[in-house]
Length: 118
Image 1 (cartoon, rainbow, N blue to C red):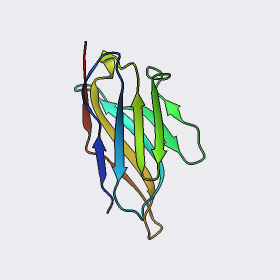
Image 2: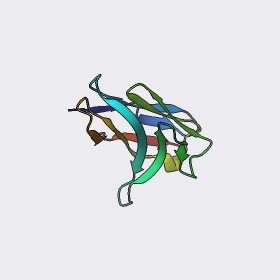
Image 3: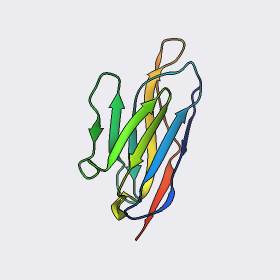
């Protein structure tokens, strides 16, 4: 079983930077790709950024140029610069890959809150 542990959220000042991390436990898990989503109460969850083996990175239009998604083995990061009030949300990582058995699998993180002060 793979578990995702998210970190790096909290209260930040508008215009500052923060980095979210999502670490997948289980050294035998082969991550193929990952995404960061975010959700505000009362609104649908939206895809913020995506990264996958051999594919282009995707960014939500409203964050492009301020956000960068990256991976390091089984950890995926979301670097957010010049944070804006509209970035306040609960952020979820979503990863997919292969288990040692060869079967594919995908997982959601528990969510981490980002609050922005003006």
